[in-house]
Length: 85
Image (cartoon, rainbow, N blue to C red; front, top):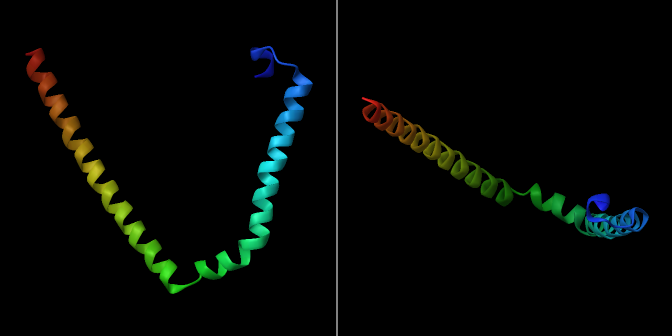
C-alpha cells in the first residue's frame, strides 16, 4: 500500500506499528482490568438467558430469510420461463 500511494516505506511501517501498538495495547489493558468481571458476568444465568433468546431470534430470522429467498427465486424462475415462451 505504501508503494501504491507513493509513501516512504519505512515511515509507513513505523506509523503502522505505532498505531497497532496503541490499539492492541489498550485492548490488552482493558482485558486485564475488566476481564475477570466480564468472565464472571458471562457465567451468570441472566447472560445465558439473554444469549439463548438472541440465538433463537437469529435462527428464526435466518429461517424466514431462507424461505423468502427460495420463494422469490422460484417466482423469478417462473417469470423467466413465461418470458422465453
